Image 1 (cartoon, rainbow, N blue to C red):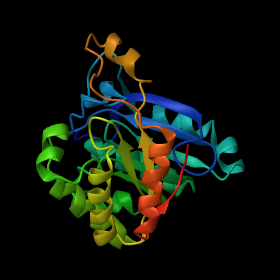
Image 2: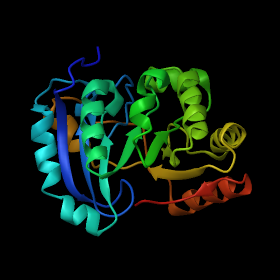
Image 3: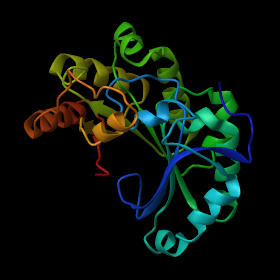
Length: 251
């Protein structure tokens, strides 16, 4: 169930000096809670609101930490990125944080898996300078199997974001054992080229940096997944370019 309060929420981490989550130097606020259950997730603590790795914080506490970083953020052309988990899972809290930072002239970005209600979240999305939205698998049955959520909702939100005029990047977690084969990537890219022609996209190769979090939570680490080679990643970018899509990288 989503948090209904706007003045406090569950936070996983506030990471300063981030350079992978948008333009310039950024502070990334990781909000807990997510409707998906991806078995490869690098932030497993984000799957629930309350666990040993999350903290209940007031909006003022979060904002006070961000404000101390403003000279670095503005000096680099950066800003604040909301990540997770799924930031829209705590939509009232996200609305409070983003609206106050927007009013302060801070550049904002959002990382989302696309499982929100667009009509409910539209006012918050319009405050963003950049939205990263995931596209994990092109087959509806496989998408539901791996994430627990319907593909149709993600594609609907992707269309709405593309039509909103907000700058956006489609992020593709690229994982052997999930989607990192030419046939699946081609189907994914064909879908993307049809519904959001000319879109920017970023392939994110699988990594194991979150394994320690699984151990801290007393959960088994992911298995059955692997990282594509750089040659395979280059091939996927080539396939995207052939379809008029624009590969980018924030790594």
